[in-house]
Length: 202
Image 1 (cartoon, helix red, strand yellow):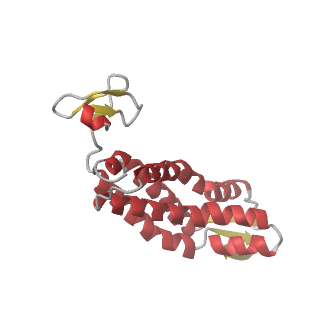
Image 2 (cartoon, rainbow, N blue to C red):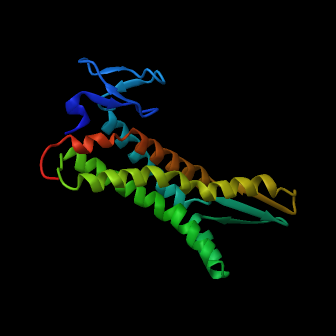
Image 3 (spheres, rainbow, N blue to C red):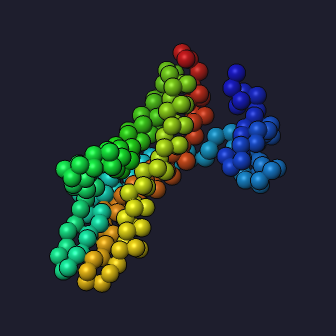
């Protein structure tokens, strides 16, 4: 039996579970947030944020994330060129961390959200528990993709010695930040309860 069959809904903000009136929406008595049996326009908003993230993913990996200016000479690095640089110079553990956090995780997150959206829209009754777990993992790990942006921001703030050495964030950093933020919004707008709406094979 599903919560919706018993007229129960949980608050999107604080998680409080309570009975909803026949109208199907009210305000949470604990945090005053609007409550619904299902998030309004969940799929369309999730699609919009996901498509925008996919568009931003290409410039995020093609454009320089940071430019180092040292003694009048400048060197620009994309995420992948930075990974290659670290690997060639023997820092393969750090190269692996940057590759997984900055390239692999955002890509896998977008693929997972795409899979969830397609299966919900096709009203697939299969693997409901696995898809719910997948959504929870996507929501949990997405924010850690910002690790290299934090590094660039710290370096840009700390390394600024005029003509001797300067680090400037590049266009790729802005695009990559957009990818991470848009995928986070996409996951936040997806309503995992939609996975359980189609009754059939488990």
